[in-house]
Length: 274
Ligand code: UDP
Ligand code: MN
Image 1: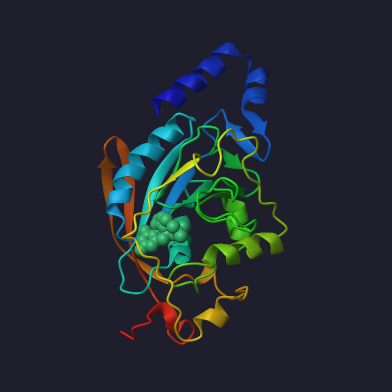
Image 2 (image 1 turned 60 degrees about the horizontal axis):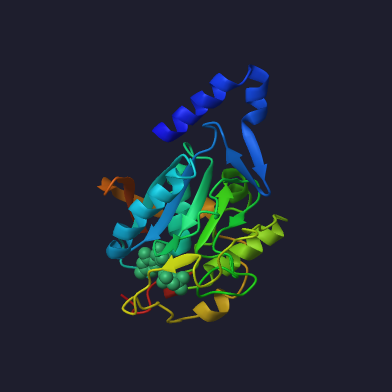
C-alpha cells in the first residue's frame, strides 16, 4: 500500500525514535487511528446472489478505506449450500478464515455504502457501530447494531462470535447486541457527524431483493431468546473453493462456503423441507 508506506517513512524521517513511538497512535475516542502498520482490517461481507451490488461495493469501499490509510482486504463469504441465508454463520466463517492475519473485522453488508468520510474505520478499542440508528437510512431503533460493525479479534472471541441459529432474514444482529452487553462491552458509534439518515449511506437495495422473513417450525420462539450454546466455536462448514478477483482496481477474495444445518436443533434452515 504505497500511500501508507510513504506516510510511515515520512513519520520515521521527521521524528527522533522517541517521538516516533509517541506518534504511532492517535486516539480518536473509542478508536485508534493507525499511524503504523500494526492494525489490519478484514472486511467480511456475508454474501449470496448480490453480484450487481458487489460490483459497486468493492471498488467504492476499497477507495474509501485507502483514503483513510486503512490496511485492509475484502473477503466475500459466499454461501453456496441450499439452506436459507445465514448471515451470522458466514461472518463466523469469515472471522476464522482471516483471524491469523488480521486483528479486527468489519461485518459489512454488501449493499451499504458509507458516503461521509467522517465515518472512520480505525481499529476499535470497543465495538464500533458505523451504521448507527440515527444515520442508517432504514433502521432507527437504539439497539440496532446491523449493517456495518467493527470489532477487534479479542472481543469477537470473548463473545464467541455470532449465534449459528439464525437462518433467514433478521434478529441475528439483535442477539449479538445482547452478547456484547452480557460481556460488558460498550457499543460506540460515530459522533458529531455532519450528515443524517438521508445522506450518510447509500443503501443499494432494489425492490427485487426480497427479504426472507418466513418463519417455520419453532423458529419464532427459538430465535427470540439469547443463544448460550452456539457461536464461533461450533460453526459447521466446509470451504469448497476460493477465487481471487480484481473488481476495477479492488482486490477481493471470494470464499465459497457450504454451511451445515443440524435439522434437530434448527429445522427452520429449510422451510420447504427439502
Ligand atoms: N445478503 C446476501 N444475500 C441474501 C441476503 C442477504 O448477500 O440473499 C447479505 C448482503 O450482504 C446484505 C446483507 O446480507 O447486504 C443484509 O441483508 P439485507 O440487505 O436483505 O438486509 P436489510 O438490512 O436490507 O434489511
Ligand atoms: Mn439491504
